[in-house]
Length: 419
Image (cartoon, rainbow, N blue to C red; front, top):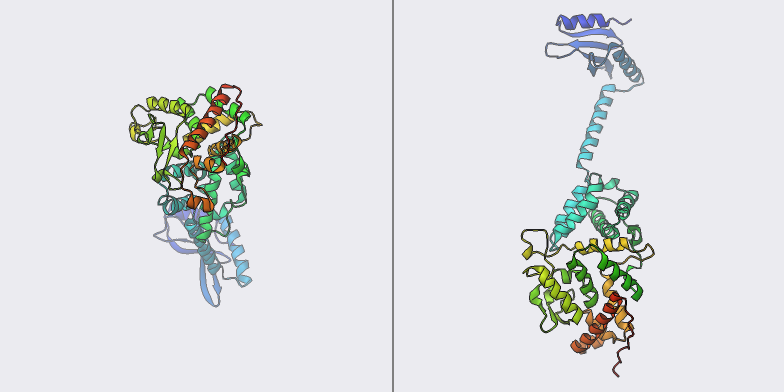
């Protein structure tokens, strides 16, 4: 029969009576020693002929009724041959190990920080911009997750959220970074598989055949009309036209300096250190392109750069952000009909190359217009720069663009091919 009751216990507490043990029965007793803030329940039993004690909790957090219930459960386990003190100790150790393991588990933000320091920062001049895109679109969404907990469904939701806000190119770029980041984690043996590996460009709102995209004359007319009627800064509108007319890569224009451009002689002396191929080239400038550059020069307000940054106090020495034109294009695409197939800025180069062929331009001249090296044996022995031929080709291409922009008919006589 139990020996304790709540009235007795409260009386001991009120009188501050201290004791090492008041037995209740079935191995349960209450201790209230001189150093205890509150009385505590304990369960005493014998295991392998040795006395063992289990701490149950303090009174009144653990009531007398609850303490008896716990004691009965522990007693039943002892009868079954369980060392309950050792079992509890083992459970605590396992819980502590689990907590420590979770604390040590690499979170996505930790993986991204490591990837940035080892893979992005040492290899990219403008690594801060890459980190900014990753932080905004990836870290902010899944950064607090453990890397082994990131599943394909999480990648799908992340990419879909970016596409749904009308940023397919950002979604595409984010997916590319996810693939690289988790590939790095696989190589470092942090995870067994890449949760982003099954996703492609089409999942990010783009096209799997992205490298085949080019704009027809009808599409160019609609694109240029939408561009001109947009609220984009005038300098950015002109940037798109120059990229299209000259066949430049985006960053080749964004990082261009006025010292490279000779408007008097209609030549852009493009330096080797800024060329993807490592080859310098003199680019002939057509009349429309010269006019666009003259407009940009006024807008540059004395900057050494053709497209200086606009929102910083030290903008004279800084270029336009590399993501600005991408975002501008996303805005333009959102204004075009849904049936208009999406394209990237780089597709404008392919557009020029395709139309040069349609205009009857020789393949080697068209390739040199893009500053591509001539392939094969001919490329080894033929070092001719085709400047005059490129000048004529780019002039004809600019005339076509001008006609399309104004909505005029353009009847072209293909350039005759040399025998």
